[in-house]
Length: 134
Image (cartoon, rainbow, N blue to C red; front, side, top):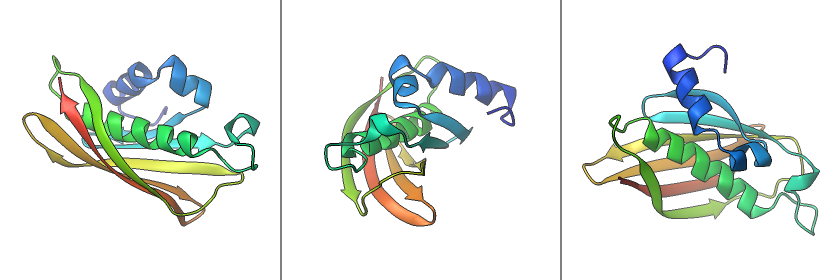
């Protein structure tokens, strides 16, 4: 995060919550309309079948997409997830995930964001979400 513009680095620090810290999500890059996060996989991320829990992947997506939506808001606005559609394309058993959220459309009431999770050149999950302008 040290290579970010100071204003964006401050934004990234403000968007980190106790929950995202607990999960282990790290900011990689952020700019207006786009956010990239990383997640090194650890033992706490696995389900009973020794694969990364789908909720972990969704948390990563929702966090990156929410931060991308947040980056296009006015100073007095906030945002919340209205809905998301996710497709999981492969199981994850370790390593590191990279997730990017990109604003597709920023309207007056809602923001549509596309999200993808990748691991070593392979698509793990694809998501499309709608976020409210509050």
